[in-house]
Length: 81
Image (cartoon, rainbow, N blue to C red):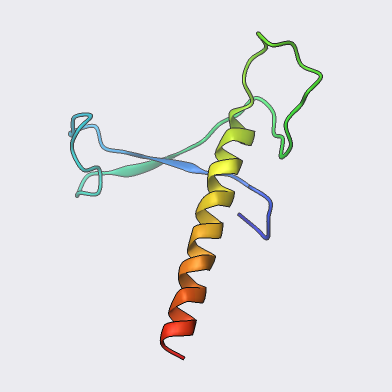
C-alpha cells in the first residue's frame, strides 16, 4: 500500500510444501497478484454473477492489516514512551 491505496501484492509460494505446512522456508518465492483490471472501490453497477473484483477484496484486507499495525504501534508508543 502507498498511503491508503493498494498498488499491488504477492503470493508466497513453496512448491515443496503441502497446504498445512509453513511456507516461510528455504525454497519459497513470491508470485505477483495479477488482475484483469484494478479497482480501489467496489462497483455496485456490476451484475451479481459478474467476475469478482479480487483487487478490491485484497485491498480491504490490506487496509485492515494496516489499521492493526497502526494500532499496535500506537499501543507500543503509549506503553514505552
